[in-house]
Image (cartoon, rainbow, N blue to C red; front, top):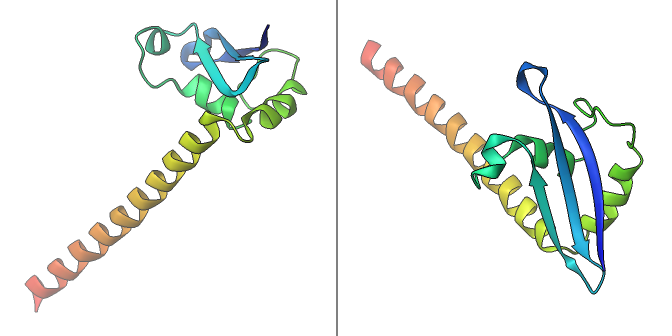
Length: 114
């Protein structure tokens, strides 16, 4: 039996997209996330899905905000949870690298002016 949560999300240009998160009741550690936007249909990264998985409420057009809490419980222990943690770490590492790059550039400029 497949369980699903559906959310309407406002995208750019005020378009509304449908995000569906589903899982098989017999294998609840495997979540699937789909969206009706073009990026998701092409198999690309879709911010609408990610926002819903992150519990973002700002662009939620549907009135099922409480389902975000249900989704948070579904995510715990799932394959998506580990992938989200890896993405979060990669973002953090990228920010550190950007800060380091900016610092190194400032140091180079300083040395060029000595």
